[in-house]
Image (cartoon, rainbow, N blue to C red; front, side, top):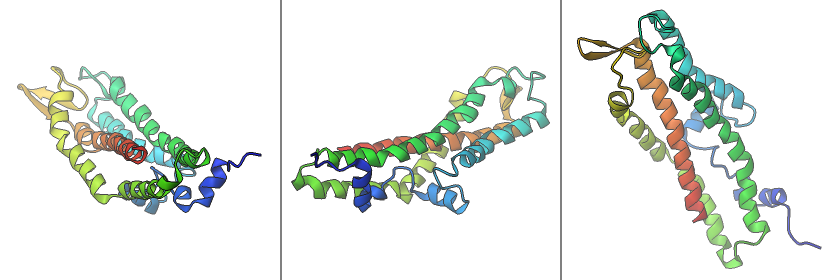
Length: 215
């Protein structure tokens, strides 16, 4: 008879495994929790709608108000900017949806290390310490503040190098050789893009935490 304990039972018998998550923690999670958007399972669709809506809907409304929604007056109207549509309507939802997949599977993966006895007895204390340290890193306020600083400090580079066109677009126009941002462009560069960049960088940070735990 096998002495191996199922991963789910093993995780529930170890408090540090039962509560471990790369997703459920950090200042942004606490903020979403207060807004009743923190539950990764029951509030997933609502969180996708809210964050994608903040990124995309004001751009749609402002572009319509400024007359740059379709092809009149600008070379790149908002609705024909495939990059922006895919960024906010595909990329942002996928970044949020991935939280559910990771949250559901990560504890079972860690439990497999114990179930399959991949961790020697003399290293168990270090293993559980590594899990606790990973949760500390996950909850770090300083880390998320640094991510925000990185996001907004890179804003100038993004505006001047990534979105430079020789023609008018829905987010900017050329007047006497000078680039002028529209209201939609201001929201785009200072709200929508930073939210997307923060979500991406936070996933890189989570990968770093996971790599450090396995190391």
